[in-house]
Image (tube, rainbow, N blue to C red; front, side):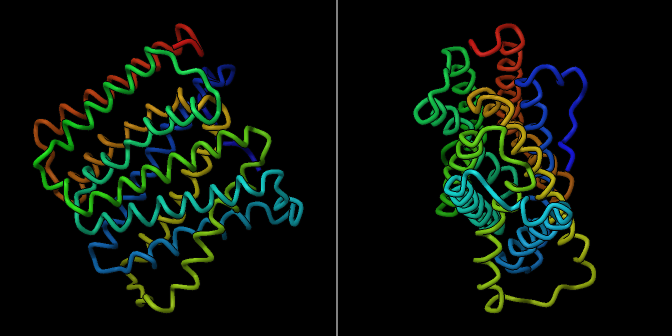
Length: 298
């Protein structure tokens, strides 16, 4: 199986490669989230949507690695893979449940607090260096997120706790991915990352199943394909570069979600939301700039 490609300029720079792969994953994830919101707002059961996302990933991966079975399913990190799969399933279900009640941009903004958790977790659990400039950039990005999530807005409801739980779950997923390193084949990680979600939702499916209208078949297929491709990019990103470096770029999901919310759901962001998005993007670009000047020292 070939690895996700990146621009040639990044081929010799693993940190830049990790950043570009992470940005690609975020783009695909936000498109998947927008598609899921379309289905859930249309009345599709959340567990049914998540089932398609995970069964689709499992099926796609099995087709890709079929010539190498069963050896391709052998993992050197069974406990890491089990933890990743559980964490990914938690992130998915917490986030998708929130989409039925709050805007795509708001849910993404709350969930995208995870880069701070990843950066701190990388220092605490992985021993990665996190310099003061990088921490400052993360702090600025957090302030940008608070401009979007400002107290008193409709984001601060009990449903906002679901994206918070999503952020915690995703941070655990990212750190476990980084801890495994680059040695684990992408297809193996893709298969095991979907395993828990596939098993749980398959058992639950008979209790929530609704017939899929023909008009929604494209959306279910898109969720499976986008989710699988995004996972490929994400796994390679965190295997290529320190988690504390690429984590701040996760904030780019906020302006992307705002864009899809506007285009697909007529969710118009206000001035503070736009300002917050610009602050977040600026912080991410600053980290990129520091990394190009002094890799690993920012």
